[in-house]
Length: 251
Picture (cartoon, rainbow, N blue to C red):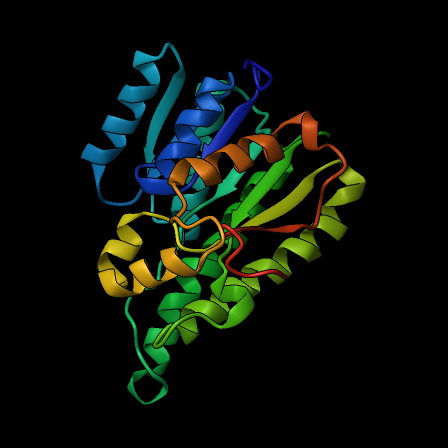
């Protein structure tokens, strides 16, 4: 399980749910992990604590990934702690913000959703790539919503995640000659605080009943895929937007 030993990984939004699971699983695989958080330092400290309790190595770095200055500081602190090479980047920052239909949205809201989901991915990728040696891997967190348009009131979020999916393909082509692979995950209904906040229980139960595997996904389902995509075991996979939805949707 130490196939990432000697590698350095950054996980943005790495303090809870999918981000936390990715941080812990990457550390279990031997990577030195930089756990980024925005405002919830306690959750970040808990995540780093879990890694250290299991004899892993991690540091916690605060930063708003929609702000270039914060992104640059994240990269600088990573290099100060672990050297000038960054081998794995997990762009996990994102969110729905709120469910709003067309008539309820204004320009500021759309810009906020795009900045949180797409701009953050662009800014962090741009800052980290110069530090990535041949054989490195980027994994972006997109969404099933980027494929099917999402649920009611999720159009801005769906568009932003669709942009992440297209950016993934573009960067796979651009960075492939440098030996950097770029892939994305497109989770469906995953049991996270995201759905605790935005998805009614009745909807979640209906999804569980209709999905071929008859359950919601777990954050670990996504994290296991991230570790695979970060490792040499997936060395010929790039530009893929991989569905993790229990058979809910086939691309």
